[in-house]
Image: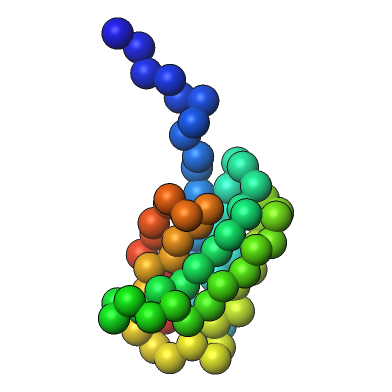
Amino acid sequence: FSIDESHETFVKLWPNPSSNGWNISSDKTLTEIKVISINGQEVYLSKPNLAEFYVENSQIPEGVYIIVVNENIYLRAVK
């Protein structure tokens, strides 16, 4: 039995919590980044097509958010 690791994606988000923005980096291209409130409202969307990206969050209210990367990677972020 073996595990195919070729489909794994490593994503890093920092600083967390943050008052100005989050840095997101990946070993693969970040094709889409969404910030979703805990109420399910999308508050930010970007399609950077980069391996590293900065999400400006100064216009987002304080709270806990889910960051959705490339439609299938979920990260918890606090502002």
